[in-house]
Image 1 (cartoon, rainbow, N blue to C red):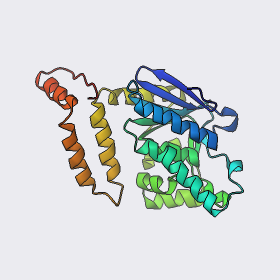
Image 2 (cartoon, helix red, strand yellow):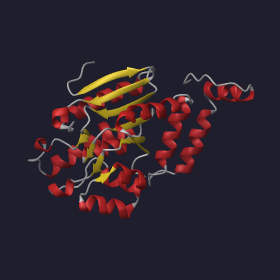
Image 3 (cartoon, rainbow, N blue to C red):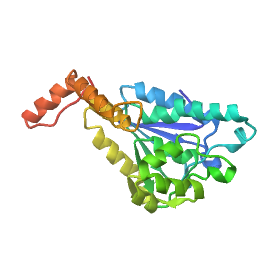
Image 4 (cartoon, rainbow, N blue to C red):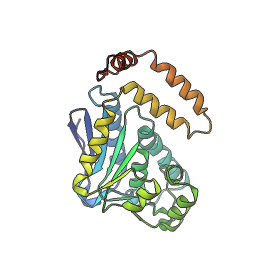
Length: 260
C-alpha cells in the first residue's frame, strides 16, 4: 500500500516506518495518524516482519508535535474523541503490539511526537535530539498518553516538572532520567536501533509477545500482573519454539525459532 505521509522500507525482518513530512517537522496530522494505524496493523500481522523502527524524515525532527491547526476550533467532546481515537488507533496499538517497536529519535520529539516515542517499547536518541511536552503553553495537556507514560518512565516529580514547565530536555538528560534507553551520535542512530532489534529478533517471537503483554500488565490497575505473567508463561509451553529452545540448550547449539 502507498502512503502520502509515510515511507515504508524493509531491511530483512525489520520494517522501517518513516514519518515523511519534513517541511512540517513531521508533525502528526489526522491523515498521518490514520496512515500510522494502517502501517502498524499491517506490520503486526505480516509474518515476514519481526520488529519495527519508527523515525522521522530529515535530521531536525522525529516528530515536532501535532498539527495544531486541525483541532484549534474543537469543542470539549471533539477534543475528548480526538484523544480517545488516537489512543486506540496508534499509541496503545504500539504499546500493546505483539512485536517490538523502537523509536529512533533523530531530532525534536515534542508533544505528540514524544508521546509517540514513549508508546514504543524502546527509545534510542541522537545526541542533538530535544524532547518535551509543551502542551500547557497552548492551554492544553498531553492527550495521547503523555501524562501517564512519562510518569511511568521517569517518576511523578520529574514528570510534573517537565509537563508543568513545558521545558525541553536534552538527549543526555533524557537518558539520565530513563526517558530514553540509549543516546548515540546522529550518524549511528539507525545502526544502534537495528543492533538492538536484531538481537531481539534472535529470540522466540511468541515469547517476546508474551513478555510485552506481561510487562504491560504491571502498569494496569485493573489487571493482576502476576496472574497475567503466569498465564503467558503457561502459554509458552504450548509452542514449538519452547521445544526448540530447550533442545538447542541441551544440544549446545543456537536455536532456530519459527514463531509457532
